[in-house]
Length: 166
Image (tube, rainbow, N blue to C red; front, side, top):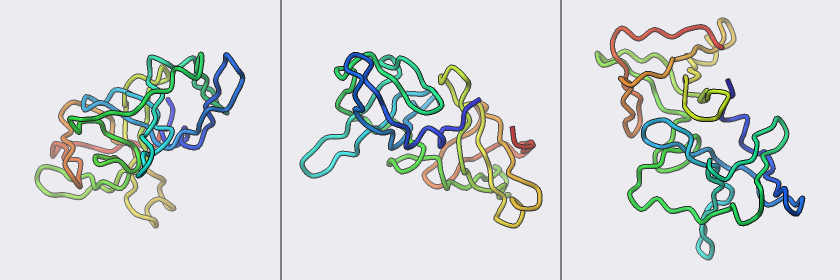
């Protein structure tokens, strides 16, 4: 398993020219929780956001992400507004409260765990607060289809239990 936040900041290298073509700024997911792409540049007033999609990856290593060539970098478009991001998109994971359907706060999302193939979200790292993190460490909310993502919260069934960190 890989933590998505560990991928932020990694350089992206084009294998055709051996050049650094960007840096991962955010990790993007589909509404179903599958990996969509890496956001390399945020769009500004005069530029458009650029992404490296999952289909254009060569490898995701410990120290860099590689792509076959510079042409693999695409302009980012999400006209429907469904793409979710790790850190700071319109719909993002980090900082969201995790709340049971009956209103019990379990903590807040600090990171997302992805499977080794970088395909799907397998869990969410949950902080129960600074002091609890120091005493007991962070917990994990295993991913399952019953998790509903709201604007400010992840809503989980009442019988949801957090597990020890992976």
